[in-house]
Structures are given as structure tokens and as C-alpha cells.
Amino acid sequence: MNRYRPPASDGGREPLDRRYSSRTAMSLKAVLITPLGDEHRAVIRNVSTLGFKISSEYGVTIGRFLAIDIPGLTAYSGWVAWSYLGEFGLDVANAIPGPVVEHIIEIADERGQGGAFGFTPFG
Image (cartoon, rainbow, N blue to C red; front, top):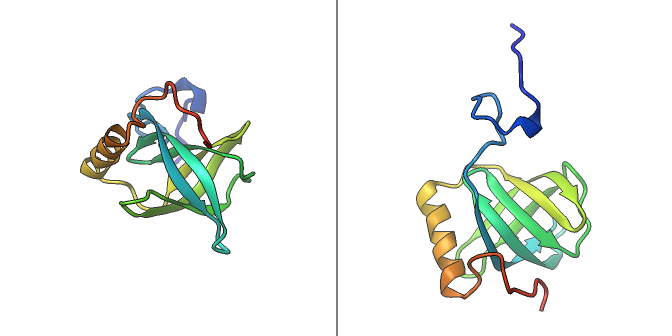
């Protein structure tokens, strides 16, 4: 059965638009891990139950499988959904439960890295 799907930029609440999710801005330092185990500095810019927006000097390609390690918590694996000018979206392999998203936000706040302002990304 063919069903109409709105453009991805529509941002509506259509159930078929799987990218729609509530996101919380932050600037939380993390470690990006490649499939070969190489580690690169990264900053989580926002988080949702579907994944992360990440800044990194490491160049990624769409579709690449990576992990993001949040020191003091755990690593989340997923695929690069989009990439643009040093930032990319990581769609996690398994949805992040809401309480865990809230805990990540709390970690950012405790470390003084909550909110997206006044933070040097790779310092």
C-alpha cells in the first residue's frame, strides 16, 4: 500500500515522520568511537530518544556506524543520519528511554555544560 509521506523538512507530527522527536540543547563533552576503536573528541549538542546531534572535528559519512561515549554513563551506538559542517546526527540503534535522556541532561547541567551557550567545543 502506498501512503503519502510529507517532506522531511515539514517537521509535522505525522507518525510516518520518524525523525520527529523532542530535543534538548546542550554542550556535553563526549568521546566519539569508530568501528576500529579510534577515539575522537566530540560535543553532544542535543539529545532525544532517537539520538544525538554531535559536533566533532572527525569527518563522518552518512550511513557510518559509530558510538558516542558519555563519560560516567555509557556508550550509545548508531548510524550517521546526516552531516553538515562539522556536525552530524547519530540515529541510535536502540531508542534511549526518556528517563535516560533526562539523566543525560542532568549530567550536562552538573558539569556546567547544559545549554548551548558560552562553551568552547574542543577546549
